[in-house]
Image (cartoon, rainbow, N blue to C red):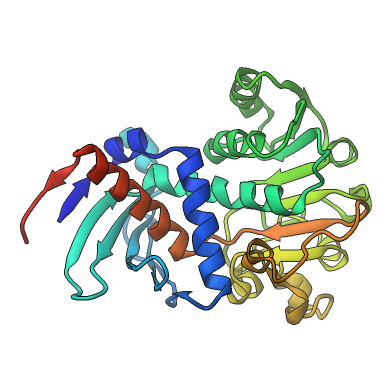
Length: 321
């Protein structure tokens, strides 16, 4: 079995490789060649932690495994990230473990890759202003991945805690882009593409703020009650997602579907667009929305990509089990 540490995985994994891995597995999901197993997520009754498993099998890529981890809110005081995860891969022919990979950096990469894929396939090619709602750790990955898909000239941003925008501005200006702080209504009128990356359970963006032609990628924490944008905005948009079953239960569409504003069968898998079985955006004025819920197959795909890179470079630690 190959062990790729968190530090080594961070060194090896690139945003380009992450995009390719997630794009391929979304396409495989759409073709019915890859599927996610039921998610387990539990409060363990210790250290206020949430712990769980995401797993699945990609028959096209012969990737089988699981991501184990969760959220420990006291970790920052220990000098550790609050989110902790590890990915385990298995040989689909024998069931034997083949790799253990640090998953914290990979989780950020695969989340950013999903929104970047939606921008590539659904946003207007002439998009020049990126809106960021949220300025936490993940926002930096989101901005870098988005900037690789369109010729953005500036980023407009808002955050619950305005002081956190300083760090995001540094990242944005490092990409050679202009940066401006705006309140949400003004941000919506300025932005051609908007990424939300928060843990909000109350709408931060309203339907009548969004201008025609906008693409939204809702990438924040997915759980029951999650709501980053107004449910009427969701209902009015052309909606795409990574996995429909997860979107309507813990994703951004749960409220619009639950209240009868949006039919489940009106939601399209982003893999259908990648495979060319759905046309995606059909007009310059269309508002498109991608609900990125984060599926286990994404984690397995990027972990497999890291393992392949590690094997090619002859790095990582081998152990016999």
